Amino acid sequence: MSRTILVTGGGTGIGRAVAHHFADDGDDVIVTGRRPGPLDETAAGRRTVRPLVCDHTDPDALTALLTALPERIDVLVNNAGGNTDLGTDGATGLAAYARHFRANLDANLLSAVLTTKAVDDRLAAGGAVVHLGSIAADQGSGGAYGAAKAGLASWNIGLSRTLGPRDITANVVSPGYVAGTDFFHDRLTDERRDHLVAASATGRPGSPDDIAGTVAFLASPAARHLTGQVLNVNGGTRGTR
Image (cartoon, rainbow, N blue to C red; front, side, top):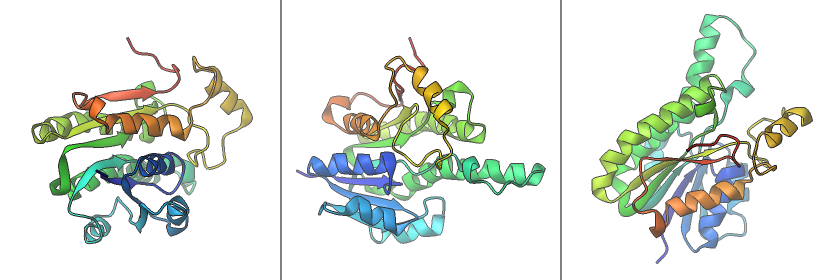
């Protein structure tokens, strides 16, 4: 039986790969994001992928989205986000710093919190919530972005305990450097890319499909006793014991 999957930020990169992975497995997938063009591209050629425009940092937009969503959601993938510092206006001073910091918190933490809260009563038993984190949360890098992703991982621990009695798992997938995404806004130099690849044990960048496969595993029957965790998918750039 097909499942219903909601993928936020599904217009490009990792979100698109996640949506295509589930759709290719026969699931019904809803992809959301702020830009209709990329969402339509994700859905093109796949009849089980439905695009819906939504800004997941906006409570009113989420409330409106609910009218278009089905009553049952088997898997929620909170992928929307990104390092908003890469698109700042260049303003300086304390007020600008606060504004830029809050933008990262909104994009990477609040978006997941609000979305999960909005669809809470539609999450089905036997299902899963998967958030996209970042290696920046553990490396102390990325400034506000890393702090937001660290907050996401911490918040997920409590979420897993809330959803666990309902037979719903909640985990975080934490990528390292992933090529083929819009994350760096075309600002990644060749030197920086080479450094990121050299830091891995596998000697290659991650791909959106690497992340999509891990997300799919967490939403599979094989991962039913795995919850409240952060799964690092970084090619060994940051190891754990």
